[in-house]
Image: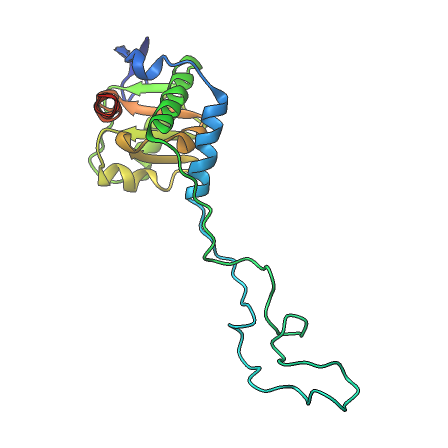
Length: 216
């Protein structure tokens, strides 16, 4: 599959050949959904936490004697039936929501989403992406000249670049990451995928090389 290549002025300057092993994979929506859910669960940060009766303070003595008061018997004011007592079956921060997903499944789903981006015209390849100073205005001007204008965009660069990272992090609905870190969840979050030509080579060397080694 061939896609047009743009320069930073938004003009077509040629074509790029996409490796069919990565960008021409038949979509299996069930697999993509399974991987996306697993990755979302693995990123989940648990903050809700309730204390049980062994963790709340107080309750070191019996509220009143066992018999003779006419009241129900109680052993501690930190019992769950007391106000301010421990919570039964409440949310706990030590709960693990992570899900295991096989590497081959994760890689296959990534290729499927990349293929969908390419077939739907949501993959934009740029000849190169460089700026002299980390200014948001420079990146914003480039994006406005490309087909991604006004849409959410994930920028996959061949390698981490501090200038590009600092310049793009304040742009709404835009995120930048290394091509070797691409994943299903982030690709599904953004409508467009923008990447320099060198990122294609980086994706191929990162994911196809791993794939070949694992199958030997």
